[in-house]
Image 1 (cartoon, rainbow, N blue to C red):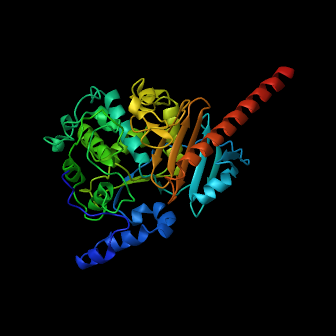
Image 2 (image 1 turned 120 degrees about the vertical axis):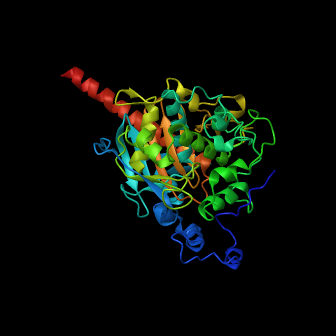
Image 3 (image 1 turned 90 degrees about the vertical axis):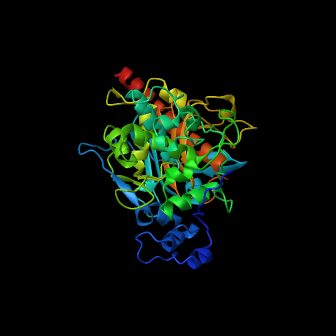
Length: 418
């Protein structure tokens, strides 16, 4: 594989960088030393709520007429069984450094809590939850007639990828994470491609499209599920090409304004200022309620305030496996979950799907119960906790879905007796 000529981002060699003469860069607004300090495990709770202090960014403005979701709070104790033990929701939140948790039922907020210094105005980073937003913009471009179908190649809309393996890849295989690229997506491996790519974008401020364009294919597309963040960077370039604008402005115009998002958000980019390029495979920062609202948008099949913003059938296609190799099961690549088109699908799914980001960010949708769950966290052991997190969110969905259903039945009975 042609290696990307860049370094790594988290847990990198401070000594080597200092020797290069630029590690502390006092003239820089975003110095590597500050980033290295901010990304230490003990600082993650603070950092994830203040990413604008650590990395360059571009604002996403809310609508002037935006209104908060209605509240009907029903906070009660919730428990579940995991690994042969009785567990509570509080156990899960405390051990996973959860900073915010919100549950919607029928579009109303029925549970809301903030922890570890976060509050309703905190703009928490979502990491790879942002991938689902990029996929949504692809769908919106199809709804607008700007993209004809998912079997068109990336270079048709992002000519900077012309002549590369990525340029020849279809939107479908990018969305399915089946592009066949030679890329190691492992944050724990000392020299992994994803750590190198992150450093190239966030520390060196390099052109991310150019870095990603150097990645080569080592097998045919459409053969297996291989989660690669670079795939989403290419899709974000497609979105930028289709709408001829930067990613933050597109998100503002196509998602934030129509959905009435109430909080100002921002998307991190490689360098400060107007010439900065969004890190398209991650790095949207928003309030917990606005993450939940986006889940509600999917629960409503891409319709908001009576307007269809996504193509009919998109939600069903994007949130279910599109090929056998995307199914969750004992032999699946990723334990306890499968994949659709930039959405995860839990094992034994029953109208359930979720968006997920590193360190435990989730937006969970349960179509059968009309439930949306949004959660932010700084969980350094998020990967090992995947199975329990799925069980905890299913327990939340079951509780609030069934409780609301029983209240409805009781109300109907009472009305019938009048």
